[in-house]
Length: 477
Image (tube, rainbow, N blue to C red; front, side, top):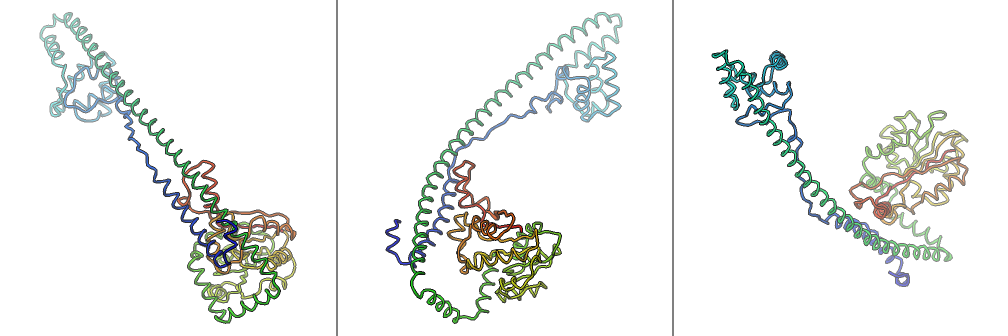
């Protein structure tokens, strides 16, 4: 919308349009986020091979075995596998020591396997280990024909050679398994690389979508700025009309005549209960300020616009003497009902009645945006006077650096006047003689509200729309 079109609209139409644009910005941002997330990629499952196929410390479970399967196992692993397969149980300490000693004294592994299989426990287990029959036959022949000992020795060497060659074949089969493992690993890596490339393309598409979305949002933001500029010009031109202040005063006077102050106060308390957050939530948010108040010197703190008294509760837990001031009589009654010190009073008049250098802190949470400029300046001036050296002025207010706050959520509260910037409040603190000040930015939108991505363009969008919703000035005297 051009400025010429804006100028052809009356004030009510412009205000309505601004609010509609702000709501539209918020819904558009959510829609763009959803659209980007709906970009799908066809990722293939990656079948990583198991390293268990390369373990040689335990023979696989199968219906039958051969003596050569045990040939290349080390001594301890051989005895453990022989026990597990021949007897169907784990080797006990005594058996393990006994057969290790036999192996190291020259006993063949075939003899040990044969002994375990033919034991009473082995017969009951009925393990099927092939390749032991020839060895058993030669052992019987040796016992019946001792003169054939020399022949037996040669036969035993020949049998050992044959079994070692069979063992080499078994070892080669393990190499084949290892090659199969490498082939599977190569395929898995190729699939993973393909998935990676698909994800890269998806990210590029998302980046292009976000770039287009930002262009649309920036155009709408510029429209809002044009409308706000025109509203500001209209306000200045109307305020210069003679008698405007008198008319404004009369309008406010007549408006207040329609409803009692107590009714308005009750409405505002109900609004706070519905929209401010629960008292427990606000109590937890305000606890972070407690360590910022000087613990030495005065224990007195004045809380301007104390509301439901969450901050007074926090001060009480920190052993400070909190005094709450509020013009809303319902809020004051709520605080007093909780045993807190609260008073319905004009804050500036109250501060003016205090002596110099008597307070540890002056605080105001979501108050500054409700009051006029001259009242805000008076608050800075009086706070600087009544604070003791090192005392703190703490003011928390909605953060207009977040565009959704500045153009939409700020106006949920009908008593808000206008947003205040960190630059303005920092300058006020400097102007009225505070020694140093800092800005805390607080309460960003949750992570799920953000546009997904970590590139600079996405971070810029998230910074404008999903950044901190509040900020606090911490000024030290």
